[in-house]
Length: 158
Image (tube, rainbow, N blue to C red):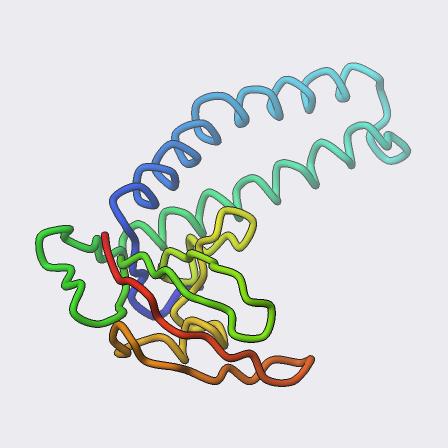
């Protein structure tokens, strides 16, 4: 399943714990009730409701197992140990896009909690990799499918 260490912020850890709790306490009951209702429809050999509920149960249990494995291997970033001298996991970065002449900000997180729509990028993504270890004032080139993006690092903070 998950073989490597899972690096999380405290916020990311809480989010995974909440999801696991919800799946175990709420979703399991809902799916079990759907299976019970589907069994009431009779012959399970031609019972699509039963098949769907069993498939949902399998997916639910797989996600629960995945979350449990991730949480066992979790390493939570200690906010006090996060340095803002250089870009690293747990830092936030203000960049200037030299092509489009606009500022962008990203939080650098582990791949588990990456969410580009929330400006959380993975340290393993092309931009994240290019930023890691760099300092304020550095200009970086990031190779992306559309070509190369150039950024200047304006600020690194928590």
